[in-house]
Amino acid sequence: TGGTVRLGDVAEINRELEPAETFNRTDGDPSLSLILYKDQSANTVSVVDAVLARLTELEESGDLDEDLKFNVVFEQGTFIEDSLKGVRNEGILGGLFAVLVILVFLNFSVRSTLVTAISIPISIVVALLLMRLQGLTLNILSLAGLTIAIGRVVDDAIVVIENIYRHIQAGEAVW
Image 1 (cartoon, one colour):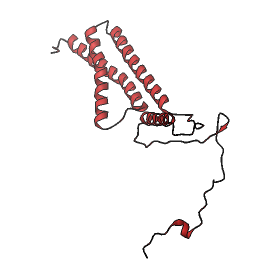
Image 2: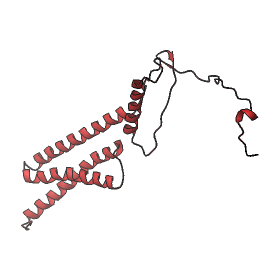
Image 3: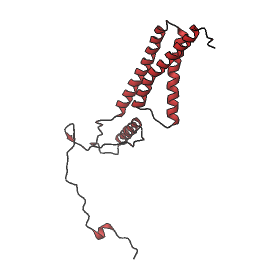
Image 4: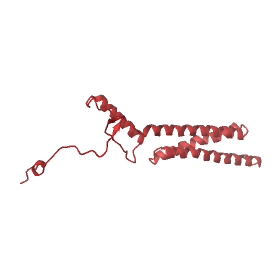
């Protein structure tokens, strides 16, 4: 007749707990675990920060039972931030040491060393700009790749400088 049919009219409804298949404990007390997975395109650090902020907001709101506590057992955000900082620092140190070695190798020719020293950050900035234009994000692998690329840039710069010196010694005009 087009009327409303409620579930209780056609079935028996019971509300009860399912028997537990596993037991979860944190610090020896019964607990409920929640595992969050991010979307593949999401930034892990941003997701972790948003979840932790929401948990803090829930705890401070006073709407929850006072016996309820959130205990984060594992999160990858801190690990990823520390790894990125480590790779970044190693890349910077590698670039500085490369410039120092080139300075010594070129008999303290500041002008020639400056060419190499400038090519390193320019190459990295261009690579980062191209990544941004393509919508790519910086992660541990891409940052490690950029760090390795510093060695390639230094090698290419040395080859160019050696060729310039070879042409100068042959008596050719450089400019």
